[in-house]
Length: 184
Image: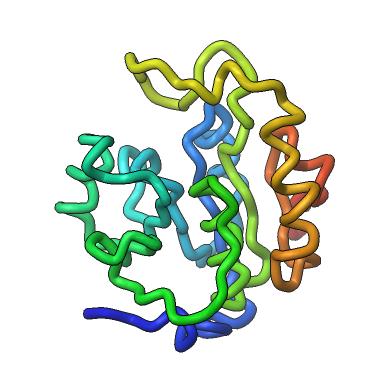
């Protein structure tokens, strides 16, 4: 079934959502999520540990065999600008910059989710890129932290809808959007 992006706006109004990156902090971050959270995976990584509701990606599946395999087997709604692999037709303006993570954050806010909590987004800081084993080079690991934060700081703060709903569980993006505080 194909959905239209415009029809998804505010569909999940006030439902909490977690955007699941693949960084080493993901497992710890997920333990702190509120109940009933919609799970939005960035690329294929989170499929190793959960069944996300959505998978958002900008990467070309043909160049990433693990992503392609997950896209062929997942029950999650696939969201991409790549129409051949997406269950959602992009029929309205979006913000994605060049990262799957920025697109996934935008998507959670577009759905009307509140809060949208970024998890496992370590911006490739540390010794390993992901929470799981990975034996391929990750060019993003050679970038400086400021290069990873720049799209969020320079464009995201102006192009993400309802920015006040975006929070971060842990990692460098806490300084940009603020830390999610668990409900008491």
